[in-house]
Length: 268
Image 1 (cartoon, one colour):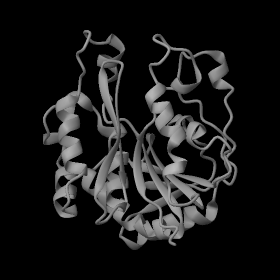
Image 2 (cartoon, helix red, strand yellow; image 1 turned 120 degrees about the vertical axis):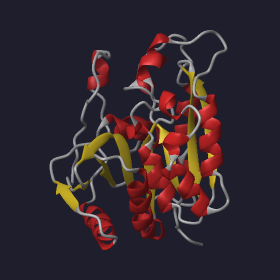
Image 3 (tube, helix red, strand yellow; image 1 turned 90 degrees about the vertical axis):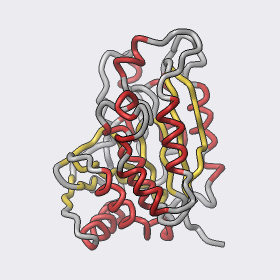
Image 4 (tube, one colour; image 1 turned 180 degrees about the vertical axis):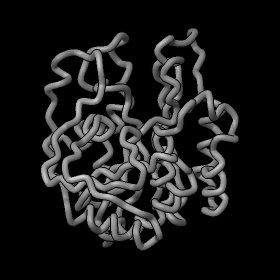
């Protein structure tokens, strides 16, 4: 029996959404249940987590080397108790060094950040999925140019980690036009469906070369820039897709929330 882990992209909701009241009360229930059920879907408990969040960008790919990362409450205007959440997962400097080595071996420049904590793209969804906070976790930044082909290639470089029991998670949103979502939509009108259909066809394509070519040109898809005026919340998917290598993707969640569609995907 292998402990090879899949690679996946999960939506992380909006701010600390899973830990506060909403109207209607069930706004985030489907995403919460999806995250709660995530560990049971894995072949084994991961030895470590490598997480790429839409909330950390650096000039070059940068790994978090902090052995005890604090939480970064990088959201504004939410209830006081949401700034008192805890998720004390340990860091993993050895995994950080291994990830850096793989990226550098593929020709990428990397840096290390010994002070970085977990931003809410990490601790909000993972507090739901892994509430015990007992799995070593390392965050990897996006590269600030957000080049989709480079992030696919970075994922391919990181793929050997999967055979070492590391679960690679891209954390973002497939629809992230917040100006539209905050206005709400007309009853029954869900934004982003055209882009979501296209994205699903790309992720689930059986030919990995075609899949990667489609994702590299994501901004040419129908509704692409309506769904993602800026792509930082989508590009974590590219890292996950690259790390999939030949493994075909599947959609594991489609949720309609705040008038828009949000999806999750898994490879392997």
